Amino acid sequence: MDSGPLSEPPSRSLKGKVAIVTGAGCLGDGIGNGRAISILLADDGCDVLCVDLNLEWANKTVEMITAKPHRGRAISFRADVTSQADCESAVQAAIENFGRLDILVNNVGIGGAPGTAVDVDMVEWAKSMEINVASMVQMSKYAIPAMARNEGETKGSIVNMGSVAGLKGGTPHLLYPTSKGAIVNLTRAMAAHHAAEGIRVNCVCPGMLYTPMIADLAFQAIFPDELLDRCTSWDNVLAWDT
Ligand SMILES: NC(=O)c1ccc[n+]([C@@H]2O[C@H](COP(=O)([O-])OP(=O)(O)OC[C@H]3O[C@@H](n4cnc5c(N)ncnc54)[C@H](O)[C@@H]3O)[C@@H](O)[C@H]2O)c1
Image 1 (cartoon, helix red, strand yellow):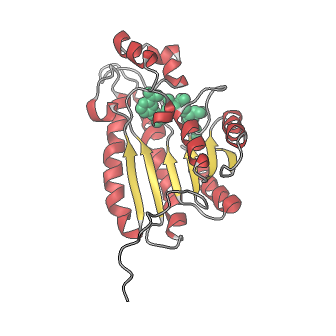
Image 2: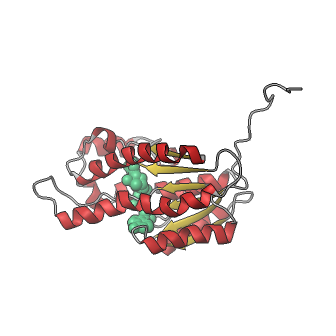
Image 3: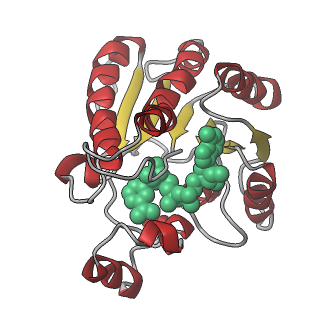
């Protein structure tokens, strides 16, 4: 006999799930997006591989996660997401240490090459696009087959870090909004490609958050004063909100 609809909602706990977060480090005690995401995932019980170019920064994220009990496990892993071999090794490390992979957060992103179409350096442009966009494909290339081995209807979830700049433009430099706009459509196309395999692909497009990237004076030079004032004076526009 059909027992009808479930009376209890499905669990939202991430216990037993495994995530990779790229750009999981952050300078000092700062809370960048990747660090905040890693801590919040672990808080929900998820085991997290904290990937960063800077191992010391990733180590600090792991230290912050393990400072509180009852969280998921966390391991730091040094990788450059523009290196195909490093991306493959990161996925292998998640499998070797935690036994599976459920979630990939493609968080790495930089301000990138400065300038308009007229004055931007095209070598810098290509390198920045590689960091901001191609790296997400490269991580997914290895993560998707690992997720596809999971049981159940929903096998995995990929979250790409976009930006409101990718929807609206609005910075004086061309690279950042172009790369973030590419991520929006990359996400749409990937979502269609992998839905049948049970892998969801989504994109978050935060507005300006007061992370160490934004606190950096060189980065601040690209924003109008009123936008910076708004970002630095709001209490709630921190990486935790991502
Ligand atoms: N801060 C904001 O206002 C804001 C708003 C919208 C979106 N975002 C996006 O959020 C993401 C993180 O931003 P953040 O402000 O926390 O940045 P952040 O600079 O504080 O952190 C980025 C991390 O990525 C690491 N990293 C850089 N290149 C790497 C590479 N090649 N391989 C591996 N790791 C690498 C850095 O070492 C650093 O730890 C970016 O994609 C950014 O575009 C930020």
